[in-house]
Length: 176
Length: 188
Length: 184
Image 1: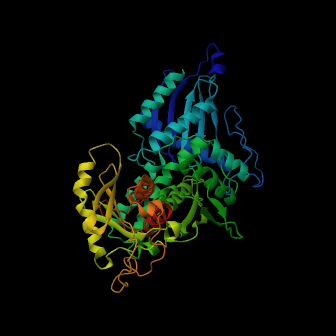
Image 2: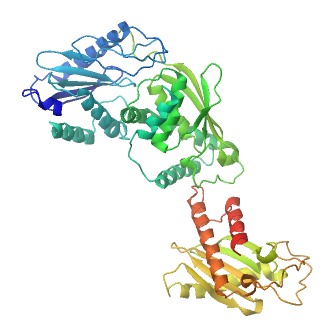
């Protein structure tokens, strides 16, 4: 927050959030601030599927790491393309550490966070927005609380949890 | 990641707490009701508990990852430490002992010194529950569900339970395989 | 002193019974009632007949422990009562030993917990054993009741225990026995 406010034009601006299930299906899409042009529902589905595929490919070209190495993960914010692999590896030597993490244009930055379970959170923010990791963690926590713990939410299905909308919306608005 | 680091994460992760007796009584009621509904067919009750746990585990894993912030484990031994020292610690406030590893590092036991689910419980004295019912069987399902979501297929079962008059409460966990097909490398 | 302890559900169903003797001043913890042949049902009868008085006494103050509420002189039986908030009654019948010419029937036909011929330590004049209405006795019974209450709550919390059903838990019986040994 504080860091963001140092940029006169670049407040913490979250344009929208997309959640993709582990099969590549779009399960959640919300806009929080105007600034980006909207897509049709169909295009969002295509975006989710395409991103899922590209992400899988970036993971498969990421080199695997020796198992012994156990230094903590480092996220390297950077331009488009695949981020360098973090300093840890999977117990399963067949899978690489990470895939695509950021995509950036002049007007927005797309940050992808994939949970260990395979769910992907895609956050569209202003390129100047800092602390995206913090925002992402909070979103993940809210998702765990209000989506995963909702007994009537069916796993891998589109998220229709009013409490999640409400809390996430309130939190995002509260911090901007 | 060393096991002491896992202990620290388990201690430091903050999670909303509820009254332990509420949990104990709620869980006890569920088991007792299942025993009634299935006419004391304890094999079936064990199966149902495992199934319920499985559904919980698949959801709880996200909470675990979101709140604890831990990354992927480097091997199954690390996974075991995470389960015992972080998972059980933050959700049940107990830290079972990890022990009895097989030489291939694919099987271990969790020994529970205390089990909040089983406080106050005395198994039905119908002569069968002592031999057939695994009262805390939901925990096996939870582990199975949670680990499946992070690409590990495991098998878990209790081998002894203080409630049955055994000296310890012990759960055996075996890694069956890492699930490879998490994502297809190429879409066809 | 010999004791007969009963737990009654709010609907007057007996859910737990135990007979035991004093363990104080050398007692061996075995009940020796004065009329061992009839003790088994007479004790229950005496206890149940005190219920009217218990129900009267329970409104006199807010305490859970009602102390000594009733006496049945023919059997020298004293009843102390304890109420739980849910209306479960703990009733303790205590019968001081006969001081002389006890002898007792030689125990034939009576089970070992209800009758026996051994007379050791029967004539003890310890305050608890000899005087059922002394403050020391009241206090000891209160301690006993409180301890039993704690264990009763734990037992009642077992998911497999149905409210109002007989308590068959061996653990509970052992704990009550232990409490009796400790305080009475």
